[in-house]
Every structure is written in C-alpha cells, then in structure tokens.
Image (cartoon, rainbow, N blue to C red; front, side):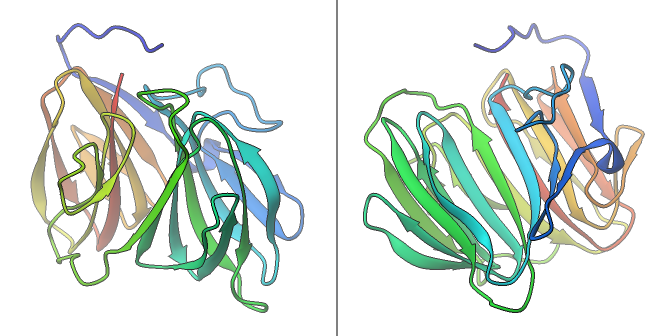
Length: 244
C-alpha cells in the first residue's frame, strides 16, 4: 500500500499551516492536512499510513451526526473543549481535553461526535490511519493522559503494544505528545525500522534539521533512525510515527 523506503539520506516533507485545505460551513471550521472531502491535492493524499489529520473548530451544540466508517483507525484528540461520543457498539461518553480516543472501525461502525458545550467552541484533531489488519471486530477505547504528561518530555499516547500503558492501535504506529519550554533540545528515536514520523506543532515553534515549524505547521520525516527537535518557543508537539 505504501511506498518502499530504502534507508539513505533523511527525507523531509514540509506541510505549512496556511497551505492546508480549508472548509468553513458556519458551525464547522476545518483545516485539512491531507486531501479530504472536496479538498484534493495530489501531493497531500497521505504520509505513509497517516491518511487524515483534520484540525476542527466546532461551534457550541454542533457536531457530526451518525455516519459510517470501516477499515480505518480513528483517533480523536481534543485540544480545547470536549466532545460527546456515541457509537453502534454501545459506547456513550465525553472526551475532554487531556484525553485521547481510539476507534478501530474494522468491519464497520457508525458513530456521532458533538460539541459537549452548548455555547463554547471546541478544537479537536481527528486523525485517520490505514489499519494493519482489515475487517477486525470494531472496538473503542479512550484514556486520560493529564496526570502522566511531564514538562519537557515526550509521553507515548498510542502504540501497537497491547501490554503497554498506552492506547492500542491496529497499526505499527506510535503517537507521542509533549509540552516543552523554549530552547529545549531532544531526540526522537524511530521505534519501527522503516517508519517515518510526522511532527505536528499544536502550539509554539520548533526546528528540525534546519526547518522551522510554527503553530499548526508539520514536517514529515523518513529515511532516518532518529530526529532531533529544538523548541524555539513554549510548545506542544504531537509526533505520529507510521509505516511508510
């Protein structure tokens, strides 16, 4: 499904925040890092197994009505506010900022997501990954990471290890997040040989191999075993490691 990568010189793909696809329908203001709905860019269809990263601002009391999915790993990360979730597996609940939701659509599932507040907007990231195994039994999980996030450290949120103290994903992918002070330098080691990593700046600014990323910019990096990141401001970073 994905291109074969021969390890050689590190490759980078820069994704500027202001070059994302955009859709404003009043109650929803969405920015698409990859081709989605009516937005299509042949250069932005996917980054390895990473298919969708939508940065959504949802008005109070509004949201996405019941709709179907299959064979996709769906991750929801509220940046601010909270979402009400309901699905065909019988799960009903609220996902707050500081929590992460993972849903394997597998053989098929329907769900809805609405802003939990009737008055305040919510900002969420919805992320889709192609699955490792198709047509598995649909499943849902969520976890609160508020108490485990440590300043100036990356915390693993999602991994393919069912025994780890993380959310599990049906893919050889790892999601990590961290809050950093300005001027911090750290190295991220690729966990699965041949994988790439997509670095998304939720807030702040960071530099990777001479490329500066500002708020909502991203950099996809592959053909490397590690990357070094230097924060140029107080920052929150999301790293998504995926098969290429």
